[in-house]
Amino acid sequence: MNCRVTGLQSGPAWGQPFYPRHGRSVRELLRRADFALYLAKEKSSDEVEWFDWHADIQPNPFVLEQEMVTGLKQRQFFLLYQPQVHLRSKVLLGFEALLRWRHPRWGIISPMVFLEVAEKSGFIIQLGEWMLTQAMREMGKLTAEQGYYLSVNLSMRQFYQQHLPELILHIAQETGFQLSQLTLEVTETMLGHPEQAARQLQDLHQLGVRVSLDDFGTGYSSLSRISHYPLQELKIDRTFVQQIGTEKGDALVKTIINLARHLDLDVVAEGIEKPQQLRFLRRHYCQAGQGFLFAPPLSLDDLKNLIRS
Image (cartoon, rainbow, N blue to C red):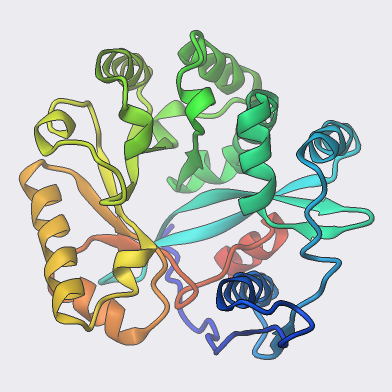
């Protein structure tokens, strides 16, 4: 079944802090405006989201780590799914799983905060395994019956786990998920150990899993090295998509798309929010994309409603 992502409402989103109550430096005010904007987009609202001290609370990393352990046991973590669509036809291709944390006292905690703490502490291994299991369990039926694919991000520690391929195979067998429908996203910075990275990527490739190079252009991998990895997809980072419409931005995005084509990689653009960005990407043959222009991250129920509609 082909599902076209049409008729979704898009609108502006604002994040608003106040000087001097929420900060005195430009950097501090911008950080809090960005956090409020993140909340506004998560709510898919056309209203201004005022900065909230409680939402921005950032406890001691040790406290946060302990709260994460408790939160995982108490089911405070949940997944949202952002649709990825074919840019020319707007046919739904798949979804990217995104991890969220609803704390009983602090509310929604930004993944920009808790994922960094989880990575440094090593808790990301346990959290990442939960995310993979939950995503493959929730999306197994949709991907098997309708051919959609599921994309899941890996962290640095996860990627370099010694038995990662065996773990993924075990989860797939336990959940009934077809590994040919799974895309694992890795970043350039995660490929800093070339020989070890190549072995891990090859083992994942042999499972039938697709591997996507996420946030391309933000790291320092050489093009010659990338060409030797068993990759199937390249994702254009949202910061580059936001620069479309400028001379340098246009040139950079065209270069990335052309590079992917020469390497025989699929291309997915992240963070598409404006019609002019979509028109540019279509014109230069970027195959797929995701962003608030199409749909925000959705709960599983909302995603099923989108597919039915």
